[in-house]
Amino acid sequence: MNDVPPIPTEVPLPPQAATSRQPISPQRFYTPPGVVGDGNDDTVPPWSEADSSPPMSVHGTVARLHAAHPVAEHADMDGVVVLSSAVAGVGVSTLAAMLARTLTQRGVKCVLVDADLQGGGLDVLLGIENEDGSRFGDINAPLGNVDGKALLRELPVWDGVPVLSCDPWKIENPQWWEIQACIRALAQTRRTVIVDMANHTGLDGLKACAGALHIVAVEMTVLGLARAKTWLKSLGTVDGNGGSSPILVGIEPRGTIRNRGTTGVAEAQEYLECEIGIVIRPDGKLCSALLEGLGLRKPNTTMRKALERLADRVQERRGGKRADHGTRPS
View 1 (cartoon, rainbow, N blue to C red):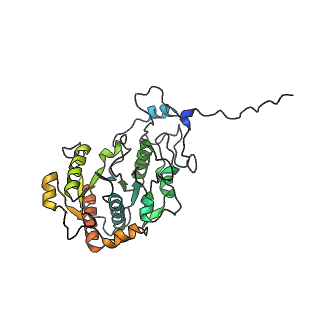
View 2: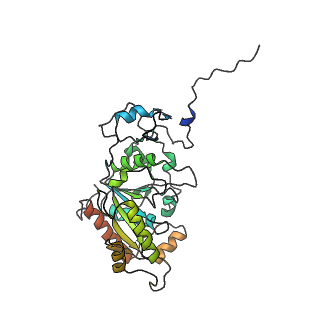
View 3: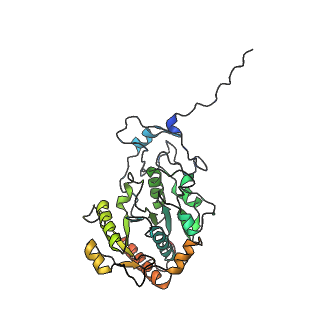
C-alpha cells in the first residue's frame, strides 16, 4: 500500500501572519477579538488606512475590531512625558531614568518606557539587564491592544520604577503601533509614563504622543544649539501644534576644560527663542559608573537640585505642582 500523508489538523496561517517575535504567552497582554471594554479601547491597525484589504492577524481579523473601536488621537496622554533630543549621545536615557526616579521618590507612581529603537538598552544602562521580566520583544499586540495591568506586573523594577526596555541587538524592534499600545495601556495604570524617545527614529506613525508633555534635551554647544533649533522646528513646537510648549533642558557636554566650548544660558535662549530654565552639568563619578556598567548611581548635589527643578516643572505642567512631595504613592 502507498503511504498516505497525514491530514493536517490545523490550517496554516497566511504568510502575512508570520512574525519573528513570539510573546511569552500568546494572550498575556493581548485583548482578543470580541472582548469589548468601556468603549475607550484605542485600536491602532498595523496597516495603512488606505489599504482596502488589511492583513490577517494571528488572532483573527483586525478590520472588524478596528471598525468597532475608532482611534482617539490623544486619549490617555495626560500623564505621558516624552523626552527627546536632536541627536544621540546627549544623555536623554539617563535624564529620563533620573526624572522617573525623582518623581517616584516624591510619591508619584511612574513607569519608564524605552522607545529608542536605534539604541535601546535602557535596562543595561540601569544595570537590570539580567533581571527577570518582559521587554518589548516579549510583547505581541497585533490589534494594538494591551492589558496594562498585566504588562506592568511583568516588568523588571529599578529603584521602584517599572521599566519596559528595548534591546534591538537581541530581537527585532517592536512596531510603532505596539509601542503606542503599550504607552496607552501603561498610562491607564500609572500616573506618569516617562518615555525615552531619543530622536524618534522608526516612530513616524506614532501620533498619540503629540498630546504628551515634551522635554527636549539641548546640548549647550554651538553645534548642539543649531541641531536643537532644527529639531524644535521639525517637532512643530516653536510655532505651537495645539499642545503645550516643550520644556527645554540644557545639557553641558562632558570632557570640557573649565567650561570652554560651552554656550551660556542667555545666549542659548536668545538663539532658540525659548526658555532654558534647567541646566544639567556632568557628574564625573556618575559617568564613570555608567561607562563601567555599574548602573545609574545617585547624582551629586548639583545634578540632584537640577532634577528636582525639572520634576517641579513637570508636576506644575501636569497640575500636580508640589502637592505630591512626601505623600503616599497615588
